[in-house]
Image 1 (cartoon, rainbow, N blue to C red):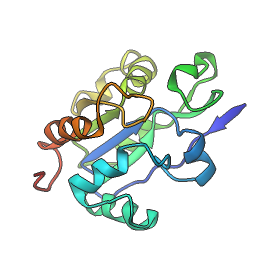
Image 2 (image 1 turned 120 degrees about the vertical axis):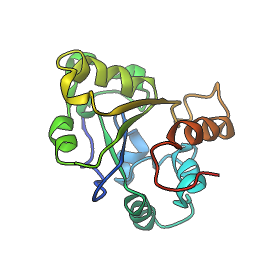
Image 3 (image 1 turned 180 degrees about the vertical axis):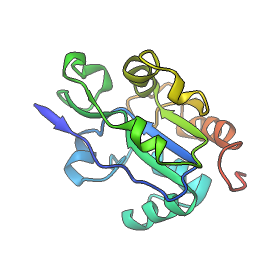
Length: 174
């Protein structure tokens, strides 16, 4: 089945764009980024900027925007049975308009990749084709918040996210 992702959560004057690969089944069902209850994304964002998982989704989105954080996925469409990134059919991938989005965000300082698949897909579709639009941005690799990436505990993921995002976020991450 061909899946279609979401529009970006676009913060005004964004400093950071966090990119996933493609929303999972539960996220698509609920029409919310990182909706799976075991995905660590909102726990991490709760610790870093106060967008706690127990807060209403719209409020969490508002908190991200207030902290100049945008969210999107590298892929707009793809064929994938289930939620695992490894099951995405490569020939079915259609990417989002990341070049245009980033060009319109004059204060954007970094792209952070939520997981290896997001980074690999970005590299294949964007960086290898034309690296010049991305040279002014810091590219930050982060461990996936997905429950499928279980070799790191959520607390370890949090610490890596905290360390790697500290130079970018306009808040005190402690």
